[in-house]
Image 1 (cartoon, rainbow, N blue to C red):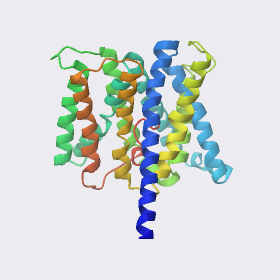
Image 2: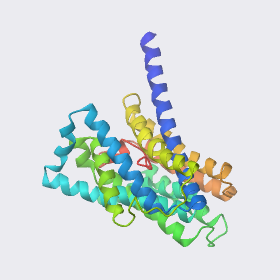
Image 3: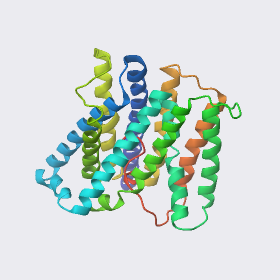
Length: 320
């Protein structure tokens, strides 16, 4: 009985940690929308600052937990070095920028839901790569994702878009870059662990984007509220939920964590509608439900040998 009670407590703690992490990620998108639309900040500037500060803090925590020199070892091998640079630029930087650009062009709810098409794209890519027909779960997920996306971007009005073409482009680009970010670094993660890889990917991405959006060249309006919102995105929208999610994997299964991570788009949608007054009709809610159900189906499908990356140890925006 005691063992059963202890196991239940551990699982409850794991569930709570994932839900808190996913909720923070969802709220960070809504906070970013406020900075873009209300205070005039640019997505590129916010992403460069977010990646640099969060990446440095994450690596500092890794260095404190282990030896300070251990985080530098990843750069000694030429192949690891090249993969890390590619991950930082075409993975971390790309997925963060496209996501925030989609928020800037539309709203946090739409951007988050469009990014959650990434798992569907991963399933399609793996089916093509392995030269096999999609499973029942994958086929149902793809169909639901297509229906959900159509309802989301048209509002149920046939071929007429309810969001701009720019927003649709950045949203779909965010899903594509998420798929790359998930699949590409499997080898790096196995060799060095998620904290070290993601920390350096953030720093690389932040440094790369700083050439276009230097952190010291601010276009937005600083105020007490905007400073708090920026700190929230860095600390409570990046660093803390990342650790909560990773730590939860000691207590619950990755499949359970992936399912609970669907709290993120739900939180982003509710926060955008209630807090920011984003118009969301019946068609948009049905579309959101279809996309979230897609992620649930793909998480529930029987596990087969497949290549995974950071998404196996953290959710989408998590590094959203």
